[in-house]
Image 1 (spheres, one colour):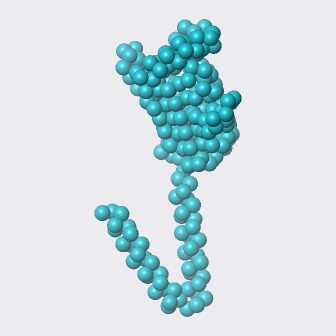
Image 2 (cartoon, rainbow, N blue to C red; image 1 turned 90 degrees about the vertical axis):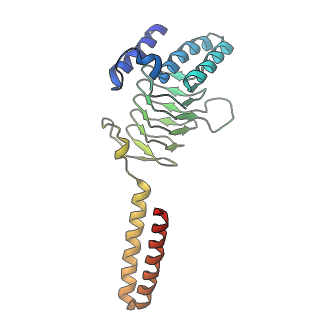
Image 3 (cartoon, rainbow, N blue to C red; image 1 turned 45 degrees about the vertical axis):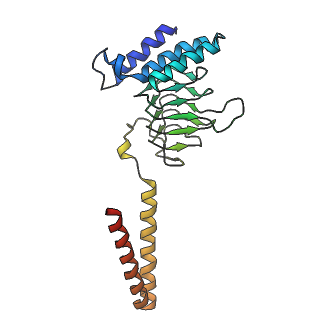
Length: 235
């Protein structure tokens, strides 16, 4: 596919999939992520043709206007949409396949200063939530999803969801489900709930075995400390 065809497809992808799009005038003022991809495609062709300095200058100017930092040597496939675009960073050896959706504030970065492949590979159909950081030469499998503000340093299998800092892989094998940020599980909350229930069971057993007067008194003291802490947080 030629350069112009790829650029036309980028614009058509927004018209088709973004519910916020209302007219072609929106492209001029409201889609810096789209323009960042357009300028990347031009700079990438120049970079591959040996015009590396010119390609970097183009992407430097692009960064000023779109607040999106894409290295011209990165590999970006078809119909990749950077929604809003502000704060996105895509490193030199990053590979992004087709139909990937990237929200604002995402970093596809490296963890090494060595030469060679040091940035992530993002397979087709991946959705990367706002503020997520995917670091190192790792692979995010096809149709996987990365939750907002997650820090991913290990591979994510296809059709999985990665959330947390560092990210954990959950909900494997769910390729076709929509990505709802507000429906993602809070794994830290679930762990604390488990620990609290576990402690409650142990306290109950100790009270039952020892008569419980001394333990009950200590439990009331802890309850008062906890109540004071909660009141201070509210204030």
